[in-house]
Length: 235
Image (cartoon, rainbow, N blue to C red; front, side, top):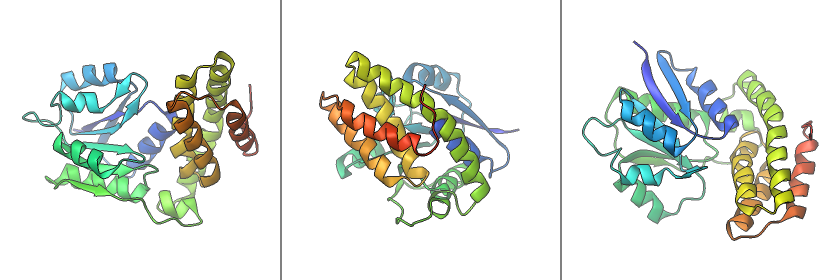
């Protein structure tokens, strides 16, 4: 019988990366939900062997689920949380709430596979994976040297980026800083995964600015032009 894994991730590209990565491990059945509400309903059904979750979702933080004791109750599956920019205090908090692994975005393929394999095979101690050492080739850094996997992921990202641009354009037109923050947040890790650190840094700046209530339309346009240079189509 397949082991059921729950992925809580609203970004389509990151979800696809996890799905493609876990194809390396046989006997797994991955279910993806994209909001706290859907995650809560899925967890209530039970039967999960592992939960992998982003920290920031459209309707709030996964931390709210963890504060309900969902990773600490008897029979709870081990939890893996990935996010970017967590400080030592947040690490300690998440570990105290039952998180077994904390992976830093962008997550390297090897770190993700190792964490899943270890947590499924035996009770593993609380641990964290630090940022991987930067190398020039994203295929080696994040995809374990599997260029075919990288190319397939990149192709899906190029298609998805058109939706991200449309989301950010609409947010700028409405003056909606929260929506622009969500668009930038999703792009930040994906751009790092595909070897575009400069664009990723720009997305991070936009996210930080929007989180503070600012709406940097000029910065968004610079990011869009970078995406168009990758072959993305603007609607």
